[in-house]
Amino acid sequence: MIRILVVAGALALAGFVAAPANAQETFHSYDCTDDCSGHEAGYDWAARNDITDERDCDGDSRSFNEGCQAYVEEQADDASRNNQSDHGNDDEDGDE
Image (cartoon, rainbow, N blue to C red; front, side, top):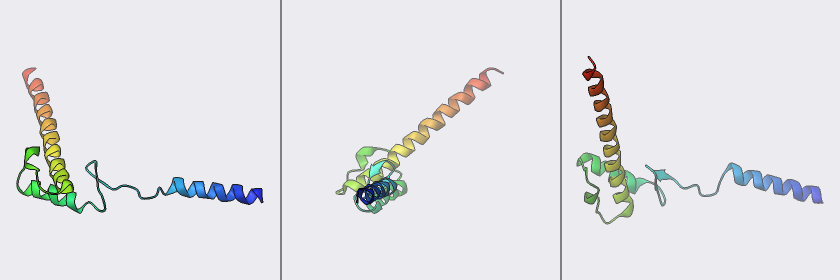
Protein backbone atom coordinates (compact mmCIF):
# COMPACT_ATOMS: atom_id res chain seq x y z
CA MET A 1 0.00 0.00 0.00
CA ILE A 2 2.82 2.42 0.81
CA ARG A 3 4.47 1.72 -2.57
CA ILE A 4 1.28 2.68 -4.36
CA LEU A 5 1.11 5.98 -2.45
CA VAL A 6 4.77 6.74 -3.16
CA VAL A 7 4.38 6.00 -6.88
CA ALA A 8 1.15 8.01 -7.08
CA GLY A 9 2.80 10.94 -5.31
CA ALA A 10 5.83 10.81 -7.61
CA LEU A 11 3.62 10.76 -10.70
CA ALA A 12 1.56 13.68 -9.43
CA LEU A 13 4.72 15.68 -8.72
CA ALA A 14 6.18 14.85 -12.15
CA GLY A 15 2.97 15.99 -13.84
CA PHE A 16 2.97 19.25 -11.91
CA VAL A 17 6.59 20.02 -12.82
CA ALA A 18 6.20 19.03 -16.48
CA ALA A 19 3.08 21.10 -17.16
CA PRO A 20 2.43 24.02 -14.81
CA ALA A 21 -1.25 24.86 -14.49
CA ASN A 22 -2.46 28.04 -16.17
CA ALA A 23 0.84 29.21 -17.60
CA GLN A 24 0.60 32.98 -18.06
CA GLU A 25 0.94 34.20 -21.63
CA THR A 26 2.93 37.40 -22.14
CA PHE A 27 3.29 40.03 -24.85
CA HIS A 28 6.63 41.88 -24.84
CA SER A 29 6.96 41.11 -21.09
CA TYR A 30 3.41 42.33 -20.28
CA ASP A 31 1.09 39.71 -18.77
CA CYS A 32 -1.99 38.88 -20.83
CA THR A 33 -5.25 38.14 -19.04
CA ASP A 34 -6.88 35.65 -21.44
CA ASP A 35 -5.27 36.03 -24.81
CA CYS A 36 -3.02 38.82 -26.00
CA SER A 37 -5.42 40.33 -28.53
CA GLY A 38 -5.73 43.64 -26.65
CA HIS A 39 -1.95 43.98 -26.46
CA GLU A 40 -1.60 43.12 -30.14
CA ALA A 41 -4.25 45.71 -31.06
CA GLY A 42 -2.47 48.43 -29.07
CA TYR A 43 0.90 47.52 -30.57
CA ASP A 44 -0.51 47.51 -34.12
CA TRP A 45 -2.28 50.84 -33.55
CA ALA A 46 0.92 52.42 -32.26
CA ALA A 47 2.86 51.10 -35.26
CA ARG A 48 0.27 52.40 -37.74
CA ASN A 49 0.24 55.81 -36.06
CA ASP A 50 4.01 56.03 -35.49
CA ILE A 51 3.55 56.59 -31.74
CA THR A 52 6.82 57.54 -30.03
CA ASP A 53 5.62 58.79 -26.63
CA GLU A 54 4.06 56.51 -23.99
CA ARG A 55 1.80 59.39 -22.91
CA ASP A 56 -0.09 58.82 -26.19
CA CYS A 57 -0.97 55.30 -24.99
CA ASP A 58 -3.95 56.44 -22.93
CA GLY A 59 -6.93 54.46 -24.13
CA ASP A 60 -9.65 52.86 -22.01
CA SER A 61 -8.09 49.38 -22.06
CA ARG A 62 -5.08 48.45 -19.95
CA SER A 63 -4.02 45.71 -22.35
CA PHE A 64 -4.32 48.06 -25.36
CA ASN A 65 -2.23 50.67 -23.54
CA GLU A 66 0.42 48.08 -22.62
CA GLY A 67 0.62 46.95 -26.25
CA CYS A 68 1.08 50.56 -27.31
CA GLN A 69 3.75 51.03 -24.65
CA ALA A 70 5.52 47.88 -25.84
CA TYR A 71 5.76 49.41 -29.32
CA VAL A 72 7.13 52.71 -27.95
CA GLU A 73 9.68 50.85 -25.80
CA GLU A 74 10.77 48.71 -28.74
CA GLN A 75 11.26 51.77 -30.95
CA ALA A 76 13.29 53.50 -28.23
CA ASP A 77 15.47 50.39 -27.80
CA ASP A 78 16.03 50.18 -31.57
CA ALA A 79 16.93 53.88 -31.75
CA SER A 80 19.36 53.50 -28.85
CA ARG A 81 21.04 50.50 -30.50
CA ASN A 82 21.29 52.35 -33.81
CA ASN A 83 22.72 55.42 -32.08
CA GLN A 84 25.36 53.32 -30.31
CA SER A 85 26.23 51.61 -33.60
CA ASP A 86 26.58 54.97 -35.38
CA HIS A 87 28.91 56.27 -32.67
CA GLY A 88 31.05 53.16 -33.01
CA ASN A 89 31.44 53.81 -36.74
CA ASP A 90 32.39 57.46 -36.10
CA ASP A 91 35.25 56.36 -33.86
CA GLU A 92 36.62 54.05 -36.53
CA ASP A 93 36.48 56.80 -39.17
CA GLY A 94 38.44 59.16 -36.93
CA ASP A 95 41.46 56.81 -36.83
CA GLU A 96 42.09 56.95 -40.56
